[in-house]
Image (cartoon, rainbow, N blue to C red; front, side, top):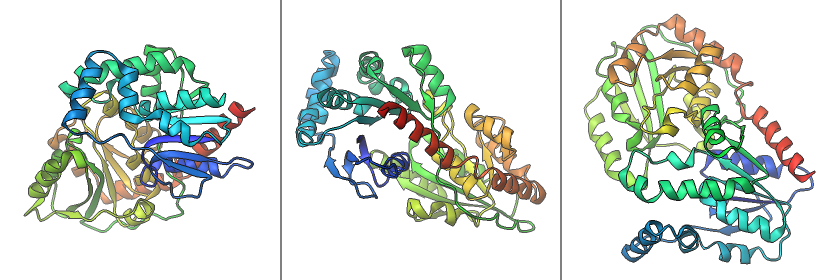
Length: 378
């Protein structure tokens, strides 16, 4: 079996769980294709990195996209035939592609090996960067092309939330199964809530589309005793935004910007807090229907949650009584949702997170993925 993802396989939580699940299955050997090796031993790893972007390459890429020469653009960017040639001696029964960026390579590899083809769509790809004009001009039509060309060739498809699955069905006529971004179950107990104090935590990538400054500004409107620790991961393409956030936090007595910690330690490290913030203004379609890693990680940390009115997250918060929902995506709305928390309500939400922690862990996803793979290999 081959698993493809143009990401760092050791730092991509969803793909890491996918690889670990597949590697645990009997009588399967796994080949991985990605930007860096996975955290588990596999039969072979092929390094595949989109070719570096200099001025000449950007000009050629833009020209190919504008000319609708999409297959030429893909070959120019991802070198699919080189990757396939490196696996010429390995027979394959199933190819799993992650995201639309893997689709043409995954299809060619599956066709060359006469194997089945499964796609894990982490986003609704054709609307992934719709808030940016350059993306809309160059990459929106390209991603719609990939969907029209390759989704009918799939033997199976999964995605992350019901809203995104519905959009794939509406636009392309495919029906993905849902595998959420839930991490493995962690055996923890809720930490005690202290009188007169609320300890908030937020972690994640410092991407400008996430409007993290609204969380920081909300901390000007919360009551005394409320503190926020932020573990932000700088994004290479948005370094200036990370520096802007650093400046915004400077001098704030109730906010700390802490060093990031390894993915494997995140859930246990956050257990000492009271509330996890999962506040994601809908800058694009995917953010509107997001059900991110951090949401489920906070549950495993046995935290109460404060979220914005994101429909997928709201459904889980309401069903499992996990926390408060802000009335809108403003800083004031977030601050109000935080200020409505009490020691008693936080303790209750944390107990509910504890009760839901097994249900909202990766175990059910693991069973579903194994069944999907077994059915495709049958």
